[in-house]
Image (tube, rainbow, N blue to C red):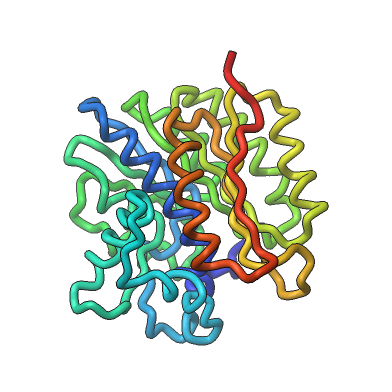
Amino acid sequence: MLSYRHSYHAGNFADVLKHIVQIAIIEYLKKKDKPFTVHDTHGGAGSYAIANEHMQKTGEYVDGIGRLFGQRFGDPLLDRYLTLVAGLNPVGHLREYPGSPLISATLLREQDRLQCTELHSTDFPLLQQRFAGDKRVRVEKMDAWQGMRAMLPPTHRRGLVLIDPSYELEADYTDVLEGVREGLRRFATATYAVWYPVLDRQRTEGFVRRFVKAGFPDLLRVECCARADGSGRGMTGSGMLVINPPYTLAQQLSQTLPVLRQQLCDVGGHTLVKPLTAEH
């Protein structure tokens, strides 16, 4: 959606989940010397200043990264995420929150690549400027699905495709599945991580069922809901559907999400890690 700005929501509890899953997948890919490519469909501005009027207006980051920053919890994946965020805030105060492109770029090695698409007329030049001079990063002003058709498959045959629309348009709920199918036809060896909001439980379950019925051979569902379903307070949670997940991912997240539940969720909140299909 051309009016959507992620700067209103950066660093909220949904971003925490999305970025922890992203880091886990990238760190797994780095276990082999062979290069890989991260393709980010909705790049946004790349990073977000906490003092920005958008972040201050909603204050959503307070109940996300704000509850975690500056701490360590003894969970390797969560602590890796917090170390990365702390590295961008060397003064010890939370002044900047990284978007998914900056997280990827921070983790990539010299031989790896990042390609991002963004259509918003304000965010695109910010994203482009953020990575000016970084030869590992390609930024294009394209619609997410156009970008997948134009830029997949990449040169490297390993990788992550991160898909996180705003879902402010009804079409997003159907376009995502078609986008994944198109991506898999072009880049079947990649891991696909699809973010989704939890606004209405019935709609969420219908969205997930469509992915299950699509017959993907290996599908993992991860969810973190800060509040009880139907609390009447907008987005109560969010999730990730991961296709071709690393074999270690479910176990990692099964250890990390209970810590997130303790730190980010109200009494009625919950977390979930559930394989939906198994490769035979």
